[in-house]
Length: 576
Image 1 (cartoon, rainbow, N blue to C red):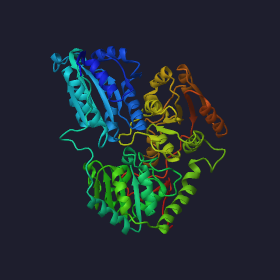
Image 2 (cartoon, one colour):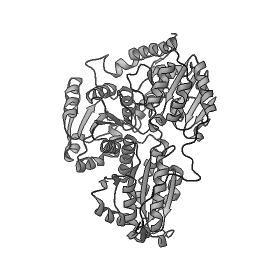
Image 3 (cartoon, rainbow, N blue to C red):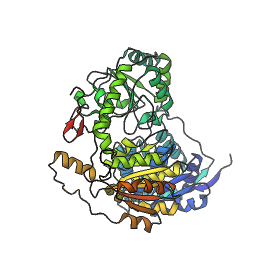
């Protein structure tokens, strides 16, 4: 191939396009100007989304990646711009989200001199990324980009950072085309699964009388939803999910029994300590799932299937492991598993669900008091129903997150985008922008609390500029609601620094050209939701909810997973 001479900045743009990137999120600045100047010539091939804050860029890229399954791309400048993406990098690492983040850097000759807007980006980001690399020569750009996309998207996905010195952006190199990376000698992202490991686990499944599957985010990443359903149906195994594993099995599937964890469903939480086998797929056994780890699954043998072997036995001891891609593992197990029925075991989940409905869900859905104040759960359920057959739920963090996740209905994979491991307030609005841009045909509904909404509210400007038709539901109780709940339950109602004085969200939304309305009464809710869904563009619904509303069930920190609070005065006990 005939070579041509181009700048490092142009080599970067061409490399992104060769990787199939069609959209990047970013914010220009001095140390990245050469890239933005060259981007001007490629607007037909590469769309740039100008956010209002660099944190918005990386959360939008996360939303885009989680819905599309492809790495999200961020371009920002040096110094404060680079440090503004650190929260998103940590969030993406914990939630296994593939990102390629490109930061500008001062000229190589100035490195280490405390030059204007110089920051040690690689040093800061190495602990919170899969790979961080500084490029000082133009000729290294194509190869580094190829490695970055391979590392970000393979194995257990995660974020990578390319910190590009300004001189490398301006220097010339000989361009002979782009070669994608599919092998790095020291990196084995998808190990072969020994048949003996599959046989051992299949024998354990076949021998189990009270098995349970916990489906995590890794099932979604591996696109293993169909294999999961086939295995569960063949062996008649109840399936629960982690927060990030929601939508790996449809809500309506008869074997899906809800979510595990601090605010999970009663049946799977209670039966975690009654199961004789737990098959955990693509999940981390984090403390929000296990509760007091010493008393977790005390009667069960645990099988852990994961692409990341460092997760094995990290928090919970296992009886068997399968190191590999979740879909390959499940497809390998299917012919080895014997058809079975676990009718009595499944009935215990259904009995727990009936108790949960009578003691928790009726209240959360507003069924107990038709004239009372609005509840967050009922808003989430009604929005879910009105959103149609294939909506995407995006959440911020807090009560809004747990209640919308609990009461939304899922019918298709990749239907929930939320900050799980890091719990980043302010995640929701920009992530919804990225999600909608990745899947414009799907209805994207983002739930925020009044606190988290204000952390990245400036991204309403991005919605205005690009006409992104997200549906924004602010569950407004004039409090930092999740902290308020803990203060009410464990700190004698001492509401220290949780009450909030909020602005007029309707006027702010309309200033950005976004339709908006307030809802304060139950009689107004259905019609307001319908207006929001029928509106062709973005819409903000500011819903006044009961400040006393709490997320139940709840397993507090330090308690066993089957210590389940149903309300402030009642714990779950089926024998009572």
